[in-house]
Image (cartoon, rainbow, N blue to C red; front, side, top):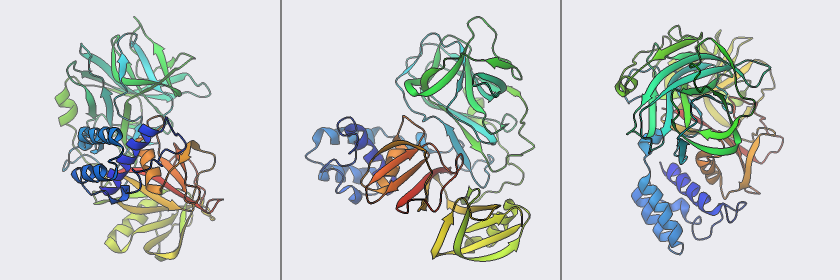
Length: 452
């Protein structure tokens, strides 16, 4: 909690100083020196900020106002309520898409289109929940088809509609809206699938902002019928430079569940209660734990104390680790030789290698729940993937900037302690190859995963 509050506060300070000193965003004197002394509650943070920042009155007022307005529950809780029997695999559900936030505007007209978020590539897995941010001020109920589209290469504008669900957004509801999918509605994606939606009317209630670095493809419909699941469509060649507050939660731990179709399907649901109350079930082969598995492909951990056994799959290697309870903290598994390393202790010589010097190895370790968590890998980097570069005073502040950056979907950071250089990146182990050890030995790499 303390780390989150520190990161949240520093991110606000970054937002208030970036226009004046974009390369020195975290070096605001009188604010950052004592930031590490903040307490573990919002009340303590109020007191600490007032004490350490008394000479920066206007900025403090802005920070405290943002803290008062903070709604941690609605932004951070997982898609289902605690104690439910929703499917939850060992790797939990990950969020893919854009930040779900108020972007200050919506389409009051001209929204009768099919839309595809070009910037988000979904992995193979199961879509379990949609999330959108609805703008206030919409004066009519709106009907929207939440969709999954599949690109048709080599074209960059041709898509196949593979899944959809009809929902109704009421005119008096706004803010974060989660649409949980019933077990029978959940859809198994193919790597590269895209998030999309179609507005049945001229008004689109989903919050948006214009962003030259984010492309959203669209298909004008006007008086044409809605796209049909299983049909291909050619979208406009010039996409809209915009970013909508829409995303999905996905379960990547049971990608071949028999309960979830991978062929084109459509679902229909009218009314909020159905979206929020139903949909219980458990995927066969997925068990509940107070931890999750974070997996890095083509990676291995050397310099560890381990037990060596044989298992035909990484899933069985993980299961063997789980049977050892707290004694086993991580695994290496080779899918070719079926060698399984049950890691019981890290040592001073422990070093993660990505790509592993030997072929066929994957690494996974247990990560405690809940919420977003940082997965730290020292002496690691991703080559040529930096989206934003600036100066930060510490690794914590670099992570905070990533958590609250809205211009990109930040999934990882690189921080160099000597120069205090901070890199924000959209790439991470799930969509890029890590370099570990890094070609430059002074870099610290960390990536974000959503656990609950």
